[in-house]
Length: 82
Image (cartoon, rainbow, N blue to C red; front, side, top):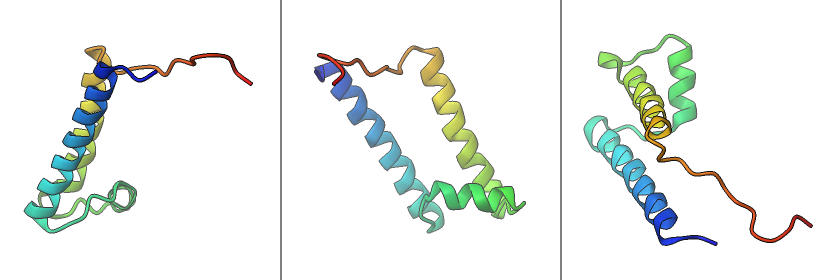
């Protein structure tokens, strides 16, 4: 069962992702396609001022911060497994 706390965290996470995407789009005119960003970065294309590396570093640091602060959640099966 989805609790209000879990739903609030999911909503906040979605809003942060949307905000980051909007900032990237408005700031550089680029769409935040993570697979394309990683591909270009792995090919050695940092882009002007290294924005690709900064974007991926921000994603990884946010995940690390969430994990160390206990903000993550694990799904729980309610009922039985068929």
